[in-house]
Length: 407
Image (cartoon, rainbow, N blue to C red; front, side):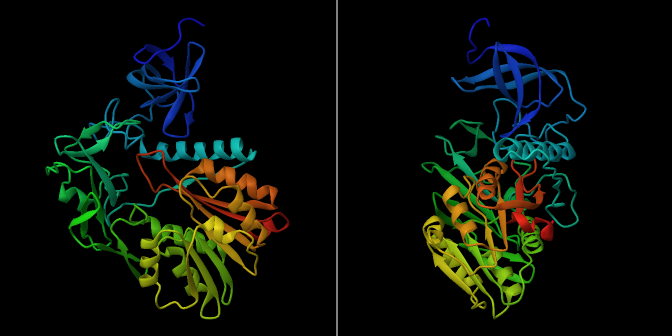
């Protein structure tokens, strides 16, 4: 086996398949390496960056046999030792989406035992109307870290080290115009920049708004919200509409039906579920964050069929039973967990629509749902985070005996 690997060691390896988290698999000295800045099929000189009993991490520092999918990164800080925000800037955009589809399929195979999952990762199109579909200028919500000299930048990968930047190509046009990296913020720890759908930009330093509105305007279709600058909203400007369309198509809400919207945030899905169910329907929207509940109350005031519940989702669904026709859940990255999945399956909805920002936790929760009698009927995936390994997946789950009715 030879000498054990240590941080700083260099060796030439052949790069294998993509792994969740923006890495590619390689092997050396009897260990599996998780390599950044590489592409499957390449031969690369890699440098070990971290070693534990479970994981060896490395960066590809020189490409000896490049992939035809390799391209020049848009940002000079996107390489080894630089900013950790983007995983795939060195990969052509169409192949980034193929890699994400491979990660989704692998997650369902490993976590849920499903061998035949196939899904295409769909582009949301250009971030700005009329602009190029190049995967840039889409991020409308960004948190910048401040170094000891007061300069705002972004963290290096798996590090608290702040990388100074002269720009960020995935930042939205409004945020780029503000240039948060250009001002000194001595004594501060973070700067948050948020662009609204009207182009306005809010700037917060350590949680205090110093520029722009405290409530950021967001519009989806004909509906408008004003979302707390510190609150949650989708970061890609085209994501809310795409996800709403997917939820409505997969869920099929009808007039007079009853729905739960779990982890409801500002009520994005609740609003359109309520419009579909009409005045004789009902939508129970459950969210634990007080600021999001306030945003939902203002944004959904014209929809009395929506009942807002400020509560922990697991506590709210515990022991609760129907009647409920459909359930939408959009949990944080850690997923819903077994207790929530068992509880919502016990409510016996016609359909469960799960919106996930992590395919591994989605697949794990799907495996739990399968034990409770629900199977995947449809999958859609969206490239809501271009240049990164992140991807949004929407899954419709139906009672096993009724899967063909939805698929």
